[in-house]
Image (cartoon, rainbow, N blue to C red; front, top):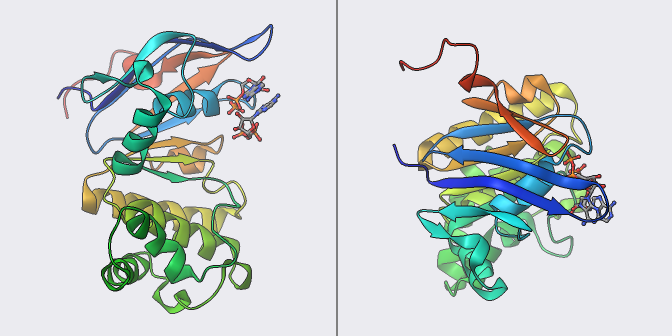
Length: 231
Ligand code: ADP
Ligand code: ADP
């Protein structure tokens, strides 16, 4: 299948040492990709370039054939809102809003009326098994519950790609696995692709494919060692 999203030969520097020094990755529709590698190797920078948050110094990012790395910030921002969902390590829910209002927010920002937005938000809270938290504020729930609410919020607009940067980084391993299982199930249900950054092998095990990032360069494990192809 043609890639949904691809990065080719990305370079990006913030200082003398490049954060990305020739990174390439391709994501097919519905595929779950894990970007693995040591701290500081460039994983988040690669994710931010793929998501159109950062523009690379060189190389291209294409989404459904459009070179998004050449679009203006306004166009990239519109694309992010309509096509992508985001889950980060923590601190992403609006503390003053209830969980229901947090999950309804992207639909409201997209112009949906309150009643319809809250109905969809409830459906997603239910799918992520946190429907009972609808009326609570983020400060009143656990880290794992917060990540489920954040995932509901990332998925509520029906994104084709969900970007998850260390989504389990603040959770213990049992909660982390539960949250990953929910994310994978929800993505499968909607057909969303997932680009995951993690340094935990147990989290990466939920992906279809692992891409190792080291010193700003990528290495696709499944493309090596001969035994590829087939299913
Ligand atoms: P990882 O996600 O693998 O930990 P990052 O992509 O966050 O790696 O960082 C790669 C390198 O780029 C690091 O040396 C980091 O300090 C640097 N870096 C990333 N973002 C910025 C930024 N906004 N400003 C300056 N340096 C940055
Ligand atoms: P991660 O653990 O996912 O690599 P970090 O905590 O390193 O994330 O970075 C968090 C944010 O700060 C990111 O948006 C990253 O681009 C930015 N950042 C990382 N390193 C630096 C740096 N040296 N200077 C400025 N910003 C940075």
